[in-house]
Amino acid sequence: MRLIQFLTFFLFFCSSVVFSQKTIKHTVVEGESFYSIAKKYKVSESDIYELNPKSKGALLQLKTVLLIPNKKSNSKDKKEVASSKNVNKETHVVESGESLYKIAKKYDISLEKLKELNPEINPENIQIGDKIVVSGKPKAAVKKAVEKKKETVVAETETKQNIDSDLYLDELGNQVHSVKRGENLYRLSKEYKVSVRDLEEMNPEIVANLPIGYEVIVKKGNVEVEKNQNVVVEVPKEIEELSPENMSKAEFLIAKASKHIGTRYRGGGTTSAGFDCSGLMFSTFKNIDMTLPRSSSSMAVGAGVRVDRSQAQKGDLIFFTTNGRGSINHVGMVTEVLENEIKFIHSSVQAGVIISSTEEPYYKKRFVQINRVLE
Image 1 (cartoon, rainbow, N blue to C red):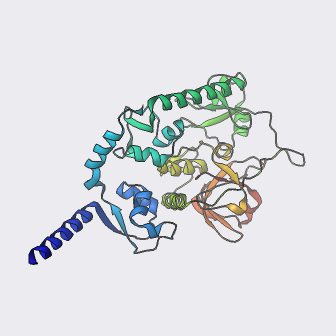
Image 2: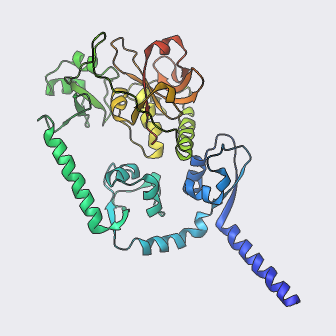
Image 3: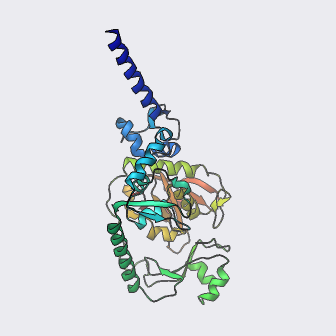
């Protein structure tokens, strides 16, 4: 009888030790979200929800104790399992300028799925030459899908106007040039035979020292939006509320941007040395491997989908016109939605990075639209 009791206790003790080695207890502190906690321990949010099912969809309260998978104890097993699972799967070799987000888009799979397929990869520090598993499908199936996508891109490209290879057409038909090393306004004006003044008028946010990758409109398209005329306007889409995972990402983005409150305005700036409005958004969304267009006008037509003001939620981009000509030239990120008021963080010319409100007379008159980018 005593032997049976001993064996029962021994088995219970061993299972407890094994479980404790595979999990970590984390006590929630101020400013944390599921997304930031997941990043801290290098696990996915779904891993946390699996161990804490009651927390999914609930507000994260201070001092809540969460069980977190102990990645270190499982890393060897995960690598072995991943290695055996990834046999005969399609891989992608990382090239210069690529992020996990870009690779996920390229192969039409979710970012979470990509992380799941590559548990040993650090999403924030992938290197050129790293091999990324991109699908659980057989190689032939993936190759066929990629080729089909390439054919579609080629077909779409052939329908565009025949313009210089350094240019591309945006959604409004504008010819846009992506700045390369050593280029400035004077060189672009000579290359495209347009005055510096015209370039400045077409690009309200433009700065003299153009950063590499900055998108400059060098010729306006045929789509003109004028007041008091009947024009076709994009109707904001009716979409669902943010999922708990995306709400967690929104909180994470707001926390990241808020760390820069008080940082001065700097034209073309994308670092803590100074931000312009689109530079702050560009830098902030990089934290979740999302690369936004570099100017507010390009973000307005090329980032996410436009939603009705009544559907605004945290993490949405909010756009304004402050140039007196009606075109979008200012962007911020929604931080709070009240009954008739939206608060947003942005970098203003006068005050630098601050939180403002749509109820302030200046912004109330100049509001244009809201885009949902967390989908």
